[in-house]
Figure (cartoon, rainbow, N blue to C red):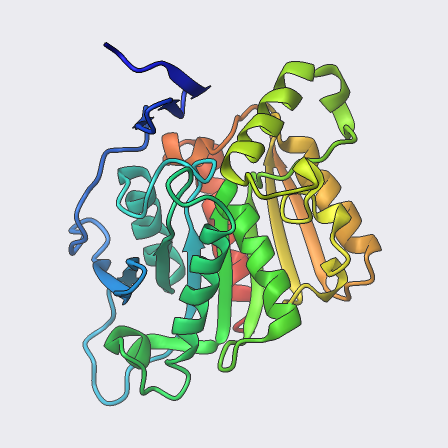
Length: 319
């Protein structure tokens, strides 16, 4: 007898009453490798054998080495997928990061955090915080991963992600502002189509009751311990008393015109400016596009423009 469905979140996942999780997308994987097109090299490493926390590392093709390798900015990346689907091994993320590493000449640590519902929030946040702490172990060039010891400049660290990954990047930056990881110089964060929400509608959200109910249901499912629902500060930065302590000086936010999360990205920029935080935030809207379009259509004009502006944001810190 087929088990009854307990939760249905199309097109992402379906969860059955017997506990079985059926992920409907984001399950394809590709191995780490030397990318022939870009010359970018990648490998998978284990950060914590106890928890199973792991990451995929990327380094760009570098000129023939003589003497000490040149140190590069480090980007810590958190993939999206509603905290439920996708992984560091997904073709879309692997291809995107190969391109970004090549264009920006940065080192990337793409974090394989544990996902809901098997590991509900705050596990993903704790995993990503632990990953950043592991990165900090390399500040003196004596850490466990040679690629970071040789190539990563930990005075120029960035956090980024899309959708749920952008939510994670923001919250890790807030936590870093409050707790400070030794050895990490956090320069900026790049939030692409961030997964934020709240009880009170902003922008056009008041006319989208079905969407509002769906987002609230997903958040309750992935974070069953949250007592404030979508007004949890993890989901609604406007409710976070720690927002003014965001632990970096520069923020770049991307929104897409046809994305139902668009108004939340604009709202985030507003509340961050009003919070008393002293840094610079820029919100950029891509016309005619939908949620994470750059992953699905990486060669379209808007995706190429996004890549150029992300690279410029990463490069600005070198000046």
